Length: 447
Image (cartoon, rainbow, N blue to C red; front, side):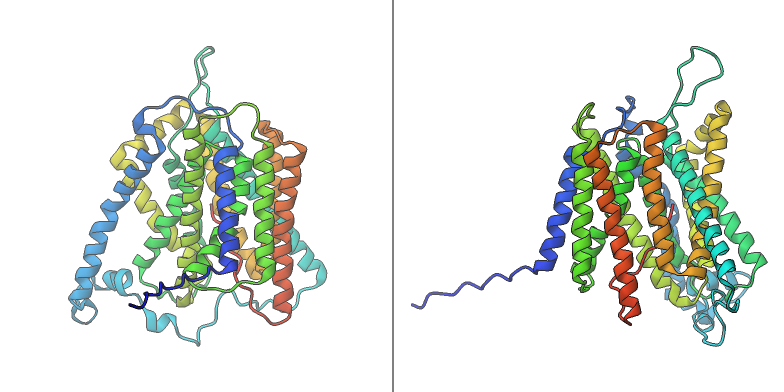
């Protein structure tokens, strides 16, 4: 009898293998060598980050589940043709939108640059204004973020032990409600394109944006701010891997080269700063998991927002829609857990925390406006350069203010990471000049 031939296994794509190896190296090194902050104070099981995460998701579900059922009900009833009454415009806007109007080609985009050709001096002043606004907003935001999440607030009575603020969700709520107000005022005072997207579609980007912001704050309880910044800078590796496996994207060789450079630079930084005091394995692993959650949620937010822009909306309209749902989700979750009252009481006990939280929200809201203005006036490449410089300065400022030790090898690793990021910007600009489309567009950074 003829022997059955076994099917030959498929050979792995060498480019995909390169990304997988880089990602595996980065994750392993994050797990064993992350620079550790001071050990967190002992907390009850209800304050453990995974329990808080599940409780937050449960709070969001109290809005998501009834909303999903209502949307399915209106679609099954064909409400767009049969609906009448006072509620019809609201239901139409929330569930169906105005797609035919939003896709009209005769309405000009508000972001169209119709300022004429300003002089070189005017352009230079505008660029300095954008760069200064972005640096001041986000450097202040980074310093305050680390202060709020990693340091204690003392009482006015001498000898009384201080206490830490531990509810990351309240900070997300503070940021979102001010961003909603700023975006609403901006939309009311300026001409915007006719809105056409069904409102419920903002909820997906809103949910992932809340969770990514929560992870960003929560991670600081387990890892240092410089480690967090470098991990965020290295997210191009999982983004490329996802694009290769899910969307079957093809990448240029310089993109693989810079991805490997980033992983090498991050590895040098983490390995060189692994000595001295070390936190427990559970603490380090928690920080890695939370950072991974940030990268996943943030990547989804960017991709979903890109798909929503087919409705020809402006960036500020997107900001308003996403923050509207973010406020609804977070306030319901905080009220259900009783955390809103606890956070307000904490603010009353510590006025300096109230000032820090308010300033944190101001920097977040106006930073987003500077993002939109900079991209509109100078394009995504200039914006990416400014924000890459901001990340490098944020690490330097954090080390100076909060005493994070960095060895010479670690400093070289940081330099390698940012060199790779600048190489990506340069190579992408060269490809655009040649008329080629870059493999991955720069992503607006959100906080």
